[in-house]
Amino acid sequence: MYEAIVIGAGQAGLSASYHLQRLGINHVVLDANPAPGGAWQHRWDSLSMDDVHGVADLPDGPAPGKSSDRANTVLPTWFGDYEREHDLPVVRPVRVDAVTNDGELLVVHAGNRTWTTRTIINATGTWSRPFVPFYPGASTFQGEQLHTVDYPGPEHFHGKRVLVVGGGASAVQFLGEIAPVTDTVWVTRRPPVWRDGFDSELGRKAISLVEERVRRGLPPASVVSVTGLALRPQERLAESLGAYERRPMFARIEPDGVRWASGEFEKVDVILWATGFRPAVDHLAPLGLRGSEGGIALRTTGHDVQTAVTAAQDPRIQLVGYGPSASTIGGNRAGRAAATAVARFLEAQAA
Ligand SMILES: Cc1cc2nc3c(=O)[nH]c(=O)nc-3n(C[C@H](O)[C@H](O)[C@H](O)COP(=O)(O)OP(=O)(O)OC[C@H]3O[C@@H](n4cnc5c(N)ncnc54)[C@H](O)[C@@H]3O)c2cc1C
Image: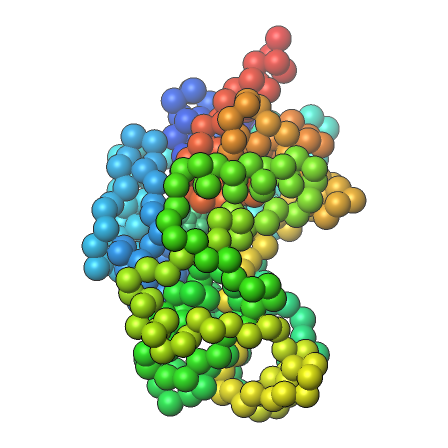
């Protein structure tokens, strides 16, 4: 029986485990991946350390710097070293199927294995729940449909006409790579909002907006969706080729392309859905944390942004890397906030 179980060993889960360790809280980290690295180990090969938007340090673990090396090897190596150096109790591969109540205790189920705990820190990220919106005719399309999680790198698209769907940072990056190689079309639901730079005030505002949503129990919006988009030097060639002249969403998908409500048709060979992710929290469903607004409401433990971690319905459950803390820096801060909340909960129980 543990005082805490952390589910997921990405940036948020490792930060939580580090702080639990420092607080002397008996815990284990259950991670579905076969190796260290969280979602980073699955990111596409052409994503270099120069391409990532910025990876925050782990607590007492400086992040690797910019380089042309692959993010999907550099960051998992760093996570693995960090787990060993801090002797974090990570068990893998363990995919948690469900968390259930057993009186005051919580039971974590993975296949035929179970663990019992007083508290949970959920740090399961979003990568395992890719989101593809519904459009009529999608199943009739005879070309290739890929999601961000399948992105095979630009060379794969040589000689094909590629439709990129989505208004986030991934779509911008994919177009930057694919447009110099082949024909692209970009569609987004809303016109993109471009920004010149990024300052900490803009970041803070964006995070506060997302935090406000999860406090109200709404499904979280991505932090990036609030900050706007920027083109980097590596995307300037695609820009000069007109790749960022966006079109509105089509109305339906046909066997060899997409059609707008106006009747206009575009023949394409590939649809690349850069349409984001949803929080991977299905295993928490038996706890009934989701409210009528469709999200899991969180309440803050402090006055700072990114510290909304405690489930409003159940103080035994902390969610990190969720909503306002769904970034590497947010995951870090939330990990500390969650460990502190667990310590407070256990103290209150013991009193
Ligand atoms: C393409 C892309 C690029 C990004 N680039 C940046 C960036 O440059 N900077 C930045 O700050 N943020 C970036 N982000 C946001 C990024 O997702 C977070 O910053 C961070 O990596 C997420 O960390 P995490 O710990 O929350 O989740 P993850 O890294 O996804 O880790 C979650 C872990 O939980 C495990 N897990 C999931 N479900 C279960 C289960 N049921 N049972 C057990 N284990 C489970 C997974 O196997 C995984 O190991 C990016 C996101 C995407 C999609």
